Amino acid sequence: MSIYTIYVPGHVDQSKIQPCLLDVHSTFVDIDLETFDVNAKLEEHGHFIVLDNDYFLVYEKEHPEGVKCDYKSRNLIMSHMAYGDPFKECLGSPLEEENGIWTCQLLPVLYFVFRPDAQALAPNDGTVSNTIAEFYDTVEEEDFEKFAETARTKESCVSHFFVVNRESDYHVVDTNNPSVNYKPDIFYKRSTISRLASKRTTIQDCIEEEKVYRRKPTNKQNSDFQLRDNEGILLNEHETFMLEIYKEYEGNSDEESDCEGDADFVEVFEYVPNYFKLHGSMGHGATFGFKVVDGITYLTYNDGYVCISMDEYSCGFMVSPEIPPKERRIQIHYAKDGNIILSEWGFNTSVHCEWVKCAYGDIFITRCKYPIEWEDTMKFVIERVQTSE
Image (tube, rainbow, N blue to C red; front, side, top):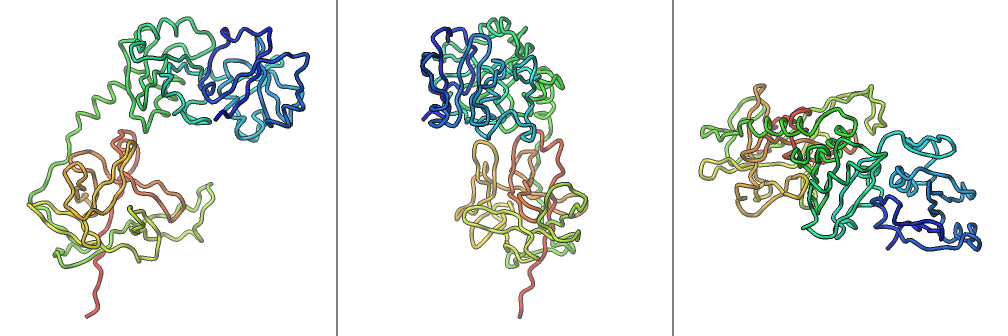
C-alpha cells in the first residue's frame, strides 16, 4: 500500500529526477496541470507532492499554495510529512528556506539499495531519512567499483562515502577507493553513518576500531567459581536469592521522570511472560536459585534455567526447561568490588538496561562494541531470601 502520492506533470521528465528511498512507498500519477484540482486532491489525500524540473512542491492543508523544495532533500521532507507540517520549527526540522526553496543544509547520504528488499526499509525511519538513492535489481549488479563511479558523478550529496544495502547488510564504502569498505553492526548503523557523514570518523578508523575490539581477550571460565551473597557468605543449591541493582536517582535530569523525590532505590529482576526486566518494586522481585552441572554454574528460576534469548539485534533473558547450549549460556563474574556481572558466555558483553522509565527498564545484551566501550557495566548484588522456619 502506497503512503505518498506524487503527481508528475507532462512537461517533467521523470527519468531525470533523482530517486529517493521513499519512492518505493509512493504512487506516481501523470497529470495535466490545466485540469488539476489542488483542493480536491487535498481533500482526498491530506497532502501530496507535485514534481517540477528544478524543484518539487509540497501541498498540505496548511500550504494549499504549494511549497517549493530542493530535490536533494526530497526523502527527508517526505519523512517529515508523515508527522505533520515539515516546515514548522517546533518539529525540530533541519529545513531552511533559501531563495524561496526549502532545503536541508546537511548533505544527504547516497544509498545503493537492492530493489527486491527496498520495501523492507521502514518509511519515516530516522536512520535513512536524509538520503538519496539508486536501486539495483540483481545480486550480480552489486559492484562497489561501479557504484563508486556513479557516486562520483553525483552532486549535492555526501561525496566521500556511500552506503550499499541488501537485506539486513549495510556496507559503507569509500567513494575514491571502494576497496576500503566496512560493514557496521546493524544495531549501530545509524551512529556509524552519522559519524562518517559529519567527518567525525573515517571508514579506515572504523576498521581499526573493529580490529582492536576483536583482539580483546574473551572471558575465561573459573573452575573454582562459587556464588556468594552480598555479605560474602557462600550459597548452597537449596537457597534462593534476588539479583538487585542499586540505582541512583539523578534528580537534576531534564527528562520527565516518574520518580517521586530524589531518593535512591533498589531495582530487582521481574519476570513477565518469556523474558526478564528490571523494576523498582520495593525489593520484591524474582527469586533465583542455581545449579552446578559439570563445573558450570547456571542461574535457575522456577526449576528452569535462565539463559539468553537471541534475535538479530540484541539478546534478553528467558527461562528454558533444559540446560542451555553454550551459545545461549550466561556467564557469571565477580567484579573487584564484590558485585556480580552477567555476560554472554565467551564474549566481552555484559548486561545493559534501556530505562523506559525512572524505575523500569528492559534488560539486554549486545555484541556491539559501542555499549561495551562507552557504557558502564551493570553490577548486581545477590540478596539472600530469608525463609521463615
